[in-house]
Image (cartoon, rainbow, N blue to C red; front, side):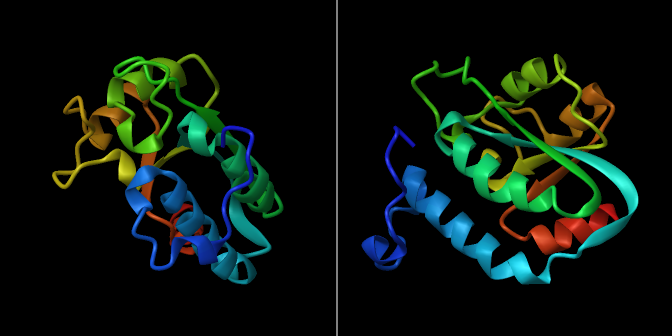
Length: 160
């Protein structure tokens, strides 16, 4: 995140800055760390996942989430940092990604069995800012799309 360490939890008080991306990232990491010990050591079927993220959280997703999930036997996890063409490259938060930007960049790579989208990519109607839906993305990619707020235990259970 701009080459700086993520501020410690104490700096956020009650996470009033969640919407700015940095507070949301801290909350996401803390929730993931709480779930870490409950994650399984293996899943039944081989699965390949790609986690979608914006540039702001990209390194953190790789260093903490992807690294840990790849320790689960039969699970291969990658991430993709989506460049925001809709609003411009200076916009780096995941919450402002569009369905079309995600689709255009995912179709160029091997994304596996599931595409994992952070819940903050979607508005209260369950749509991206460009009115795409996860179902549209799923159809165009011919791959399952899962929405994750911060509950990776449920995600792993649903794909097993």
